[in-house]
Image (cartoon, rainbow, N blue to C red; front, side, top):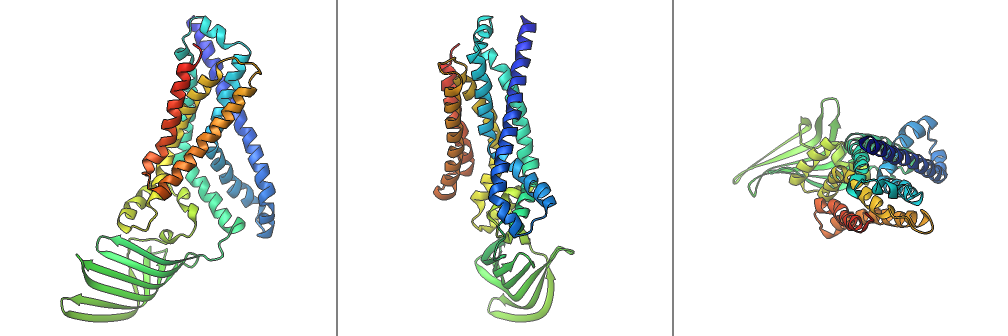
Length: 362
C-alpha cells in the first residue's frame, strides 16, 4: 500500500507541475503575440534595437505578466488535470483503495509549496530586476515622457528640515528654485534659497548654485551668499522620479528604506510603497488558496466532461485577480490599510476553498 501511495503522489505531482509549465508556455506565446502586434508601431517609431526588444523589454515583460497571471495559470492547471482525472474515473479507485481525501490532497500541497517558493523568490529578488529592464525600455522606446521634470515638490528630509523644489529635471538631475528651511521646534532658524541644485553622482553630493542663507537667532538675523556649495542631503534623484511604475522596479531593501524615509517626508506615496512591498510577500500564498479551491471544485465527475470545470475555474480565477485590483484601489482611494488590502483576497477565497473542500466528494 505504501508503495502504491508513493506512486500516486509522484503521478499527481508530475501532472500538476507538468500541466502548470505547459499552461505557462501557452500563456507566454499568447501574451507575446498580442503585445508584439500592439507595440510594433512603437518599436518602429522610436527605432528600438532588436537586441533591446528581446533582452530588455521581453526579458522583463514575460516575467512580469507571468507573475501577474500566476494565480490564473495555477488555478487552470489544477482544474484541468484534476477534472481530467475525475472524468477518466481515476480519483474514485484512489479513494476506494483506502486513501482519505485529505491524504489525496498531500501531493497537491507539495506541488503548491514548490510553486510558492518559486513565486516568493521571484517576487522578492527576480521580478524587481526584470521590471527595471522593462520599465527602462518602455520609458525610452514605448511611451517616453514628453516632460522629464517633476514640479512643485515639497519634502521633509528629517524632523527639523523641509525642502521645496519648484522644478526637477530627471534627465539632467538638476533642480530649479530650491528652498531649504530648518526649524528648532516650531521656530525657523535657517532658510536657504538657491537658483539651482545639481546631483553629483561621482561624489554622491548635491551642488547648490547661486545661493543665499538667512540665519535667525532670536531677534538677530544674518545673511550670507555664495556661488557654489557642496552639501550632503538625505534625498536622491530617484525621489523625484516622474514614472508611476518606478516602485515595482525597486528592490525590496530599497522599498523598505523608502518607506522609512516616507514616514518623515510625507510626500503622499506611502500607500503605493506599502502595497508594493506587501504584495511581494503575500501574493505567493495564492498557490495554496487556489490549489485548495481547484481540487475541491474539480474532483467530482460531472456530465459534459471537463468543460464545466474549466468554465467555472476561469470565472473564479478572473474574479480572484479582479478582487486583488479592487482591494488595491480601496487601499489607494478609500483608506483601507495596505496590509489588509493584500490579505483580503486570500482570506475570502481561502474561506471559499474551505467551503468547497467540505462539500467535495469524499
